[in-house]
Image (cartoon, rainbow, N blue to C red; front, top):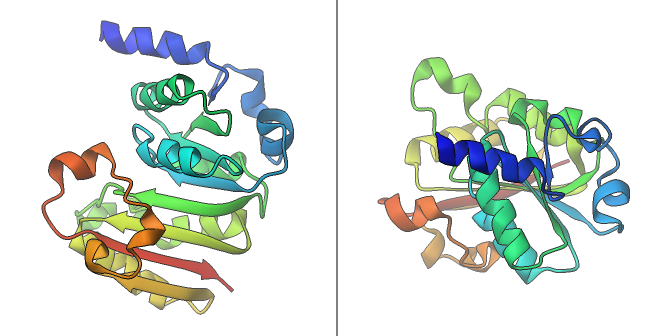
Length: 216
């Protein structure tokens, strides 16, 4: 508990963390490039970013693009923000907020790409609406993605993956769907840049599934 409090105090003073209590928290919607990144580069968002491994990994590979990790857990955001500081990454920011509030922080078309990396599979039927590929979340993503923007899902959970495929294939506005049930033995592997989250390194027992799609 003491360590959590200490981490919360650290991120409260960090410029690369946007969270309640900071003026920019209520001003950032539609203004990420102007107020935070100070450039006009494209924006990629990792939702439920956890410790931010993908956000940081992508930011290292693509310094000409901007990356935002979103999570509600302050101790997880502390880790990602620390890695950004240690690596002197100026193209990274972290937003502490619920995923359901995404539209409160991004204007329509402000995001170029969304990553969902090993989200909670929410296996119980009563939690279906909380899956990050359920219809209400897909509508949120559609509202903030630019035309031609891309959503990417990476998971080891077969149930979540099959559910996600069913939801996406059932939409008339879903376009460009590409799928693999074995990422590391697939032509789609380069799209994930062999970045691995802590979860994937420690716990993944099944083959990694991956898909990407957009909205027409």
